[in-house]
Length: 249
Image 1: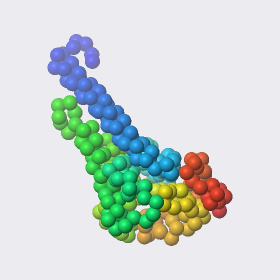
Image 2: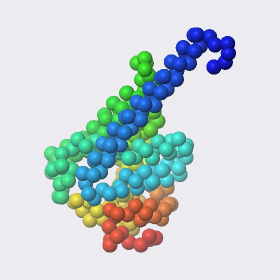
Image 3: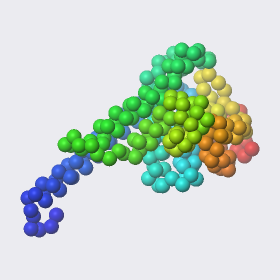
Image 4: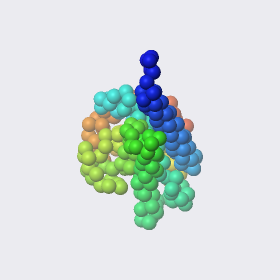
């Protein structure tokens, strides 16, 4: 503000600052709730360990190679922690079942993608309204988180869920997370399986180009394979060392 002060200008500036403060407070509250829910999901399964830490690192490495901006990479990193937040709505007898899911259980499990997106969408609505109830601008991290939560199980050839999207109709953030999530799932111990070797996981990703995975993203992964293994080793408390194989295959 510059002198002489004009009442209308002062009121306008104060309203703007109050809107900014309310938006920041609302975002911080929503983030706290969302990340608490995400942590609750991870803690339900003792085998997931540092799964989200690895996914965040994998996805940022992929996104950087795909030309994402710094702000997009930050949003991608944070959004990755919420990718499976919808599993908070899946009962333990399904989520932690030590064997193969039957058709009914699998149908229930697949609902976690839409449930997660709905939870984040509610936070997005809350955080994009100002103190006068007028719509504001979406927060980039929430937009990415919603895309990832809903679409990280979509497949390049359209065989995924929940929407059967194909190719570039799948948001880039979700295509990146899809590959990162599958790689980490393959090499990690789960209640229903033992970890796979890095070499075998690499072979599966390579074979899934153009079918499960965006072929360009798969090529980025294959080119930087050793770096992905290094991340897995760094956060390796739930990766099976006996079956993981050497760092470089």
